[in-house]
Amino acid sequence: MQRTDLPAIFHDGDQLYFADTCEPLKQAASRTEVALHAWGRALYPGLPLPADRLLEVRSVGVWDAIGAPVWGLARHCNEGIEFTFLARGATAFEVDGRRWTLRKGHLTITRPWQFHAVGDPTIGASRLIWLILDVGVRRPNQTWRWPEWLLCTPDEIHRLTRLLSQNEQPVWQADAEIERWFVKLAELLEGTTAPGSAESRLKLCINGLLLAVLEMFDRARIPLDAYLSSSQRAVHLFLQALPAYAGHDWDLGAMAAQCGLSRTQFSAYCKELTGLTPMQYLTRCRVEQAAQLLTLHPEMSITEVALACGFNSSQYFATVFRTHQGCTPSAYAVQQGHQSPA
Image (cartoon, rainbow, N blue to C red; front, side, top):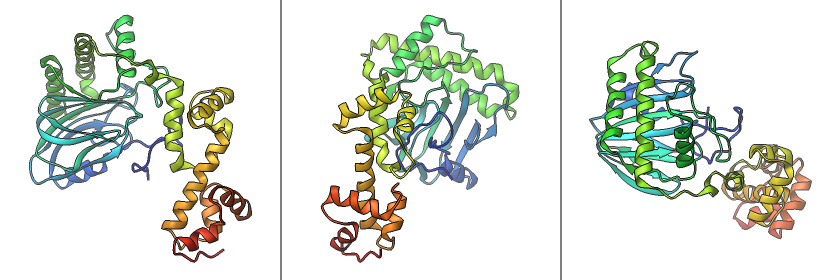
């Protein structure tokens, strides 16, 4: 089962990329607490999209929450860039620890590395339309790959990519043209029971929506920040998330590959950001994770804690732990009020 309650570390494969599966929404729909019309792939809700077409479209849908409060979507990420539009009502929204109250006409845009939540923790009466489009990125320094069926010119694609990758403002007031395309998208979803038969109309809606977003950005003259799409930012996000996955079997090559960098590049960025080498930083994360386990899980033995945090033996773990904490793991457990068995 995929985890959505931890910061994500993005692989290009399928090992440590944790995308949302919209389980609360699926359950609410099964209880008829929301009217849901959606098309999706993999674990996303709704009717299945064609297996051989529109592969970049991961999920598209509309919900109407009209009754009692519905449990929202907890902190999660998506395997693509997500556009949502609130057509009616109001709901809480959070991105990277910042909170908003979405109201009618609000557009949200989140990138795959931006964790966000909808509801606080429930969703009130609202109508929300969304699109998740996979553009081939899982970290900010990757090259965006847009669908071949987009009608945008190369210059428009270039501008749209820069505007979306070098600006991460998540909430906007949509204009009439953006609203028009979201409404068309909702009408398509609500009026079609066979996604495969609506390929051309779905492409039309997505093309229209992306061009409308580009035009809104052009008018707004939004400031861009090249750091947001830099390799240093990718390393920063990775290091932020690493403590939650310190027990994974990391080495320098694996950590560097995670960020799409050479060992030398990754090491230089890590030293710049943390003052430590990658392996020193990993060891610190593992010791901190071990200290948490010793505090929160007194039933675990020292050996179990060591193995859970990526140490190969309890003896080596005890040596490293003492170097960082000034006492042995057993003594630390006793200090926390626990008598931990060896």
